[in-house]
Length: 300
Image (cartoon, rainbow, N blue to C red; front, side, top):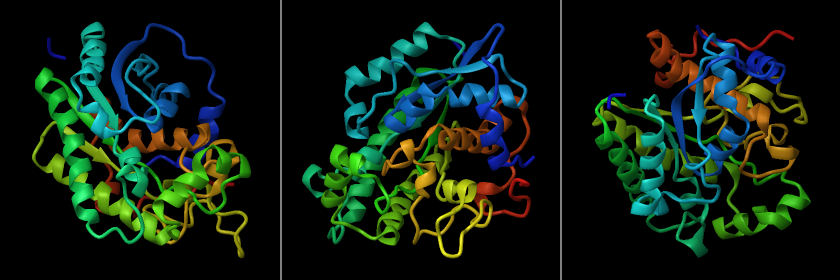
């Protein structure tokens, strides 16, 4: 069965005040992946963004196919791939599968076979992660020639300002497993790993990739810096020597997850870079190729 430039900071404010979605709704997107996919699903960030841009009739699904803590290496298992198959079979109107995977494989650190500071052959790890992601992508693409896949990436973590509660939960042990890298060291490795995914899209016409590096720096700025860095001052991919601002993180203290406003910004980025074109046939604005001429911060 077959299946411009908007302003991120303004969207963050608008989305928060949208009334509940109403009317007949058609699932068009299946979210697949780890906690970044799960948080986006739990907040219904895509549905809110679609409504904001004139498409309240389109929604995403992800209740069975977003698994916090999951790794790309786990999703290549037939049982995990079967979750995707089942969700698509039950919802034939879905024509886009949005996947976020690889972050947990990377962040597993030295104890879990992930990246760590001083790793002698990080490139082999990046290739292995990209290969597992490619297996999931190719599985989806083989199901139906009308299906498209969107790989949605990550923004920089914050292993600098996280709270004591999140230290106890997982941030401190995770940072230790990574070898305590400085933001520039960690972010550079994250970009190097994520950039391999672009190569997948070059050979798969129905695959697109959207990265979010520096998006939170752009949207939130760094109000506590000296001097303060206002929203809109750092254009994506931002300053890789800095983390994502703590104001963007979950409960104002997480090291890897964003809060709802942050994921609203991710959804807005996905709209601008992919869904605007997928739903309306309007070409993308050049953001991924580095054209920032149309970027401007939200007015106060």
